[in-house]
Image (cartoon, rainbow, N blue to C red; front, side, top):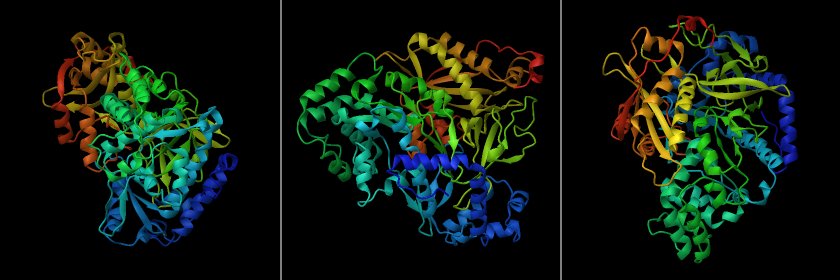
Length: 594
């Protein structure tokens, strides 16, 4: 576990980071020993280890599991059984995962002690941007967070998202820390109405525009949703600033209390400045123009979030886009020691004290029909190899043992003795018809290539997802694209031939097994792109949020199977295009290495 230190002392934070990354192996061994010794009497460990709690017995006898293997234990605790069936400390919260990968949120156990460790983890990476970005300490952060309504289990354990846990941890006793860092008052951030909260956070940020040194949100997609919201409401926001009164539809008491600290008098001069910037034909560099003292945009931009980088850079107008840490509901994993690197080059340095980390090597086999995990071997953190891809397997202080996270990480190097990883994506087949297996990374790369064809026509890809259509033979891939434009008020009506060429480019970018199925075997039909109307993906997000997903944690699923979600997408389709050409394929490609 992380040693206790003063989070306000940046030098102490950086010293702890140096220590834990230098002594990675020793710390990992001590973490495993601590977890096994303190949880020796739990039902779960006793059932597998039979009284032997050494590392060798752990690796030999404890299975590598997924959530489905573990669900029954979580359900038992949720229904009233003692936490000690998996953990010696009380489970104080069940964290709700984003849920958009598998469609249904998972419940992840968390103890108060582990929550404290996560807060210390945040203190480790907090000094890094200040170390690298000049002038960042001269203002405050406009970081957009949103509370998600929580629930309780039958045994009265709170069920919350990680973001809600962080927001709920702000108390009258420590509120001064939030106020020292953030522009928006905590009252607004904890408003349960996301729309009112977003509006008032923007209003605070615009009123205090000269004091904003950093903007962002947990994920790139959520920050872009804020910018789109600003695009729809800037005129009303300017009216509020001009008159010195908030719109009458803002009724939440917390929002009204919070905004009253900023919106105290009419300010027509400020309203005129903001109106001038927002009414321009192009919104290029709008973030820099509205917040002239901002030094960076902060958001996760790795994995599936990488597709949003061009739009962040477009709106940011040259502001660095920084991605500070990698984590999940199950475990906080690593931090970015070089925050000013290019977004596409982000690597996260593992913090060895956060959990016991093991890894399954991931190899995508080119031979049709083979499982993507070929001869899996579980290895320790310090034994990973640069250039190889792995799926993390974590053992935590909150009762998860050899639990597969489902992510794919690529080793890029080492910081001291701790490996650094680039987040590739989810280790999951998102599309498959016959022998083809298209992974999230493959699909994202193919779409990235295709969307370049939109740029000469001033169109941009706002968001996308996919599915397989088996309603006719042969089945085919369907992509749902929401398009926008860098030019204000431009009609979103790309020519059919442009979209047909996009279809073909996606197909050409997929692997040889897919292309063989299309050209030679003819068991895969032409790929289809369905353009959906503006706001379709907001409707999709609202659907998943209604099922328990957090707005702050929401990630657009790259493949949709839920029938209700598909109905939402199909109801918003405005045009359809198919690939008119057959992708190339040569026999030797099946035997070439990936």
